[in-house]
Length: 500
Ligand SMILES: [Fe+2]
Ligand SMILES: [Fe+2]
Image (cartoon, rainbow, N blue to C red; front, side):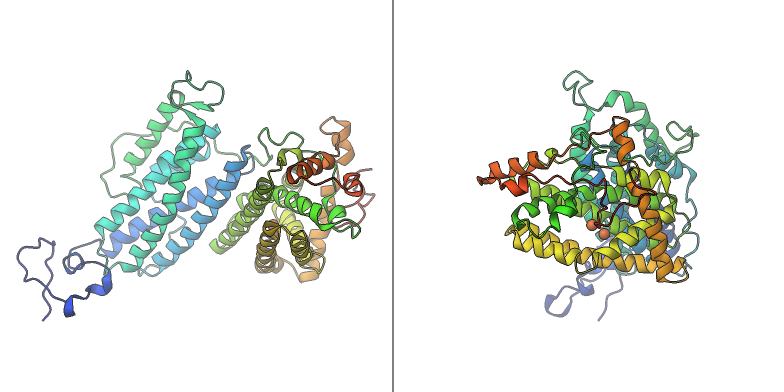
């Protein structure tokens, strides 16, 4: 016999319900009284889901837009991951809203003007310290609180698909919150400037008013989920009083002292059959860590390309994060050897030129053209083979996954870049024609005193030999080929657009 659930789960008046031999009832979702309680209506549920969706969208926008000009490498890479995570949750929430008797319409609307101000303010945060405090002390905790409240307010049987969405979101938001808490501790000075005056980025006292403004935005919106009564009173904008302008100039922290240096042609070294595989591992790690330029560039494509289907942003953000991952693989590779990667000059010229001289579609064209080249026999497979031959387990492992990722990226390019052209050939030619612009500037940067294109290879190689206790190979040590005359695909730099 099935007991009728109490409407409000008061627990006292219903006969105790017994499942078969005590097996957890309700498919293990919750107890019978919990399944029998009241919950959010479909309409109330959708209203909240749309706000979570909006919040993840805005967070994705902020994380992406702030990658390029953020100097700190650890934040660039974390923002890349967090943008990817937000994009995935946006997609899941869009699908769930579409299941709730709602056509997937109205998802582009702003659910509350005060929520819009809240995210605009964080997008426009003038310093790294304020940005991380706004993101990780205000936005992420508010989103966690909203999902927690959804789980407390909704009926877990009736609204099970939303419950699942909330639980997975909470799992990843906890990771973001943990990273953010540690980061804020490192970048925001809570001691009023006295205790850590040299390494603190922002004195908390200086941003107290602004953090209070963010709280007022949420209160005026009735909470991020809109479940509270909105607090009265108007909000006046501070950092978003002027509309945000995307900054596409890549910036690096002090561990990147020579960002215009293109003095070591890594490909000329790796593809030289006369050179042994062991030192090629170092060049592979250099090629990986140098990939930090790709998130810096892809962030500009994603930020400046409007009105695409959400799957475009989701897949491009996945690729952006993969490229940040590849960069991290390089950092981990160097760290595993105890080699000081600061001895390698990691340039930013690729992202700098692309972001400042090419339109978003032209950047995408170059990206696709380069990645197609990586699918050739001499591309990613070759790097993996070099990794294995170098007898460094990380080089082999990382190149294995790097290769798999690039196959995915080629597919993403086929799905989102190629259809904008008559055929594949036209799309490839378009990318190739714009690629040459990357090789401009070699001489100009030197003449302007921005770099001497110093050959840093001997420093790095000698450091690695010392750490591994091996004698330097004179042939390897004397390598000195730059990008002045040969591109990364080892073709000649065209005279018309080249560095001469
Ligand atoms: Fe990559
Ligand atoms: Fe890629």
